[in-house]
Length: 376
Image (cartoon, rainbow, N blue to C red; front, side, top):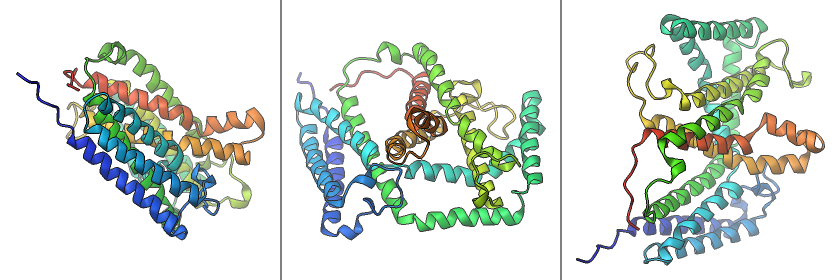
């Protein structure tokens, strides 16, 4: 009996659609240069696109669209053409992630979590003190102490909270169009990444390699998760000092209670991220702790950890090239190797992103059953 041909229209169609969108954006920029959001006039300088004129960016997107259409054709053909489509799609995903995308995604996630940080911290204090046992009460006491210091130091009161919220919303409104374009480039990177995953997965003929087995993933995943959890701690520490009278890195000329609260909220967001990263290798990352109402003692769905963890890992990875280029061009973190070291300590995106991605991958490999091989 003849082996049925695998269904390949899905990845091929997706590649064609993404290619047409890519080409449409590039053609639009070239036809109307005033719509180009990047380049030398871009106020967001932590990006590679800040150095790309419209002719280069538009022409590059047209070339990427042509390659994408070629990928769509190859995806519908038998091997070896079909097998070449996956790596090519992965290359386009890398181009959009490392060149066209920037800090927009990580900024959006950071400020979204920062706006919710007061509610998260308050809820954590209450639940930990009431139902968290000895360690929960200890953590709750530490959070309560930090909140008390913040109130006594001055940056936390209803008026300051209102000004802080207005400042953040105003910044999003002012940079709204630019932010959307940065997110659009990240979305194209994600779309090409999804196409590449479908194509590469369809071509896999064997089971999991040794490093992907649950027992092996547990070992290297623990190292990656602990390393990723350490990465945001220096940033969190510096920003949290803004809630105290001993603020680090805050110029007196711009010192303002609302700005202090903004820095403290971002520090809380980074600290929450570090704690959640530890959950990737902790028991409470697999089973909801008993002190959590309603959900206590239930298994944590894999997607609850993989989806947000993968999103943050992607955001930190795509922010890394722009951050490094900005540091080189401006010397914003100081001169020479010392400046580079300080920049990597405060914004460790080039290290943090890959470590977090590895930790999330290890978590998924441990929690999901071994899949049967997929025919190519």
